Length: 187
Ligand SMILES: [Mg+2]
Ligand SMILES: [Zn+2]
Image (cartoon, rainbow, N blue to C red):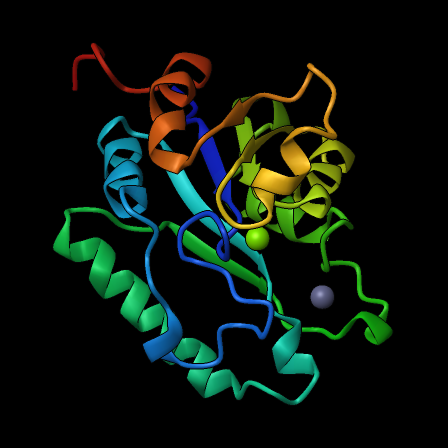
């Protein structure tokens, strides 16, 4: 059975965002319940991956090794609650690079779908910014908004077609209803 795939923006969905970027592991602070939410999605047999713009790398403000250290911390924090990420897809480019992977372009999401051999209809993108939702739409993936990070300001501007949840933890029951899980399936 093909697994469903949950694509998550990082900043403002998994961890608190900052207008000055997250530039060190010390600045990476998980949003309450987000790590446990990922663990619950793992337990349901869903593939979970991050699709994140990190233009601070391309702007010369964040060394790739530091970004790696931040993601090490994220993996460790997840493991401590029994969760994991199946992939972390990053666009490191500055906007001027005009790359194909920087959201709102669809390249990053397409990379993830391809790696996991997941049809867009079996995936969801969950983000806190308009560019997450646009990247989702352009990849044929349904986009949902969480009101953490930038999402609170955006929620009122969206039409009724976009599902909105207070945070990732609050979205879990709906994700489990929407995507094919292994619940109830004999091993
Ligand atoms: Mg974000
Ligand atoms: Zn890029």
